Image (cartoon, rainbow, N blue to C red; front, side):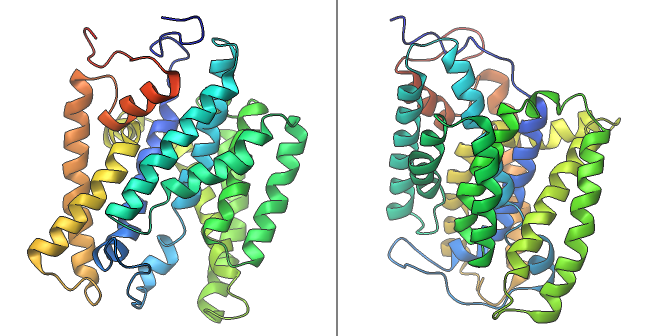
Length: 331
């Protein structure tokens, strides 16, 4: 093994809270994606237009992908810090990681579902996140709100991704992420502030609906996503921590594998069962209620024998340029 390709098995221990939050976000993303996936195929560019249920509009739509985007920025900067201690050219390693994700995302997009987010993450990572590693941390922290405000004025959606990436990176570079496992008052205080903003934003969203003031929808989503994260971090400091880890951490540790297999499972369900997802929210909830427990069970059993999910393992192999250990006991 060359000096620039140390064993990926070495390095910092995982931050359990990040796995829990990632797994929680994955659940919400699947719930939001069931209908778009079922109503489209690789040959269709846009999902069938269907009315959004009130419950989904309040608590799910655009409430979970901001969490995932934030965590991507966190994970990127954690890896940069770790790689900087182990290789001579850590940015080259991160370039390989983003290019590999882009390839995975493009395959997912053109073969399965045009709503793929991985290719967007990879592209934004190449254009925004990787160049930001040459900036001082105050510049990254300052650019994040500027990009988020600009995205909100443009009705949110994927435009929020660059700002969230930089916010996640700033949280790492200022040491906030290193303290999330040992802090209760901080997440509680931030969560209350965000909740105070989310309540009127949700009211405005419901009062005004789509149109010139559609900024309320992505703003409410962004604030509520923050509330979700802070609430989870607080709950992880209570006796509920073991239960939360048991439920969400296996999903979070295999997030890439689960995100991709969810598309396959939803497409299979829609084709085999001939369910009209465009008009049945019950079908959406039932499908998510079947897929998520199945993925949790598969993830929990898999991680008993293997260190990572299969896609995570391949992604790490491509990132480091050397084959990482796969099984828990042996290579």
